[in-house]
Length: 152
Image (tube, rainbow, N blue to C red; front, side, top):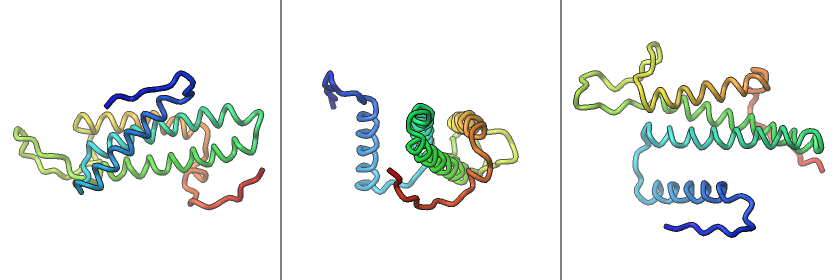
């Protein structure tokens, strides 16, 4: 599949990422495959990247458009909550059994991660969490989702 990007397209990478998500959604709907750690690792990477993008947009929008900046900051918090839930779900899924290993497939949060992709997702989550905790309080991060009226 070849993606053609017009020269005046300001967001080619966002469009390509959106196309990838649509493709994976279509595969998941047609094949009804069970979720595994690899899929959640990729989803966590996407959510973390979108979280960082919204964080940058919120920082840029705040000085000139404070209301828009607040809405983007709320979106950033919701993305972090979704990222944290995907990370938790990742650790609750059993690890695939390798032929060389006779260990059980249960998750062991009391010991260090067993390597990729566990180590990768945990490192990514810790790095994103460091940024999030610098800008938000625990109360902000644990606040339940709510609807806000659009202020113009």
